Image (cartoon, rainbow, N blue to C red; front, side, top):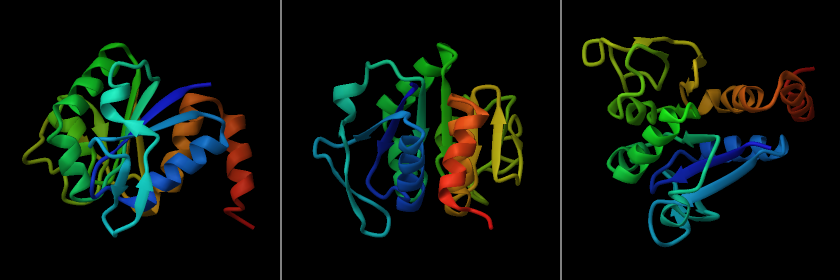
Length: 185
């Protein structure tokens, strides 16, 4: 099964992180959550406390099939300010591995230069065409351009997680997870 890294920075968007972690684990994808700090308890944007599996320093050189950046503020800002995150993003991208970001976190991909010439989406106002003319911005809930996946925000987290499942596994696994969620009557 695929191996995915989800770094958790202080102020991450809890709905996005928990939804993505939960759904990927339902699909039996290995998910490693890693705190940017030395302590593993990470406080989200609305005060929810989550215990990460490990710290980023302990897994920084591990091999992952994908890195997924949850959004939220100031979480996305902390991810963007962390040179280790940029190094992992660039390493995985250069190895043709997948990178993903939701909500405010696509700004990290943009600042790493990974969205140049790509189509992407994000939380409204995080990226704009005047500042980022080399990125084709979309209002779609989820955008997949080659091995880069982006999504708009908390309301699209479930669609994003299901798209990631299909990207990393197959349509059948995605459907099995989605059926178990009872999303429609």
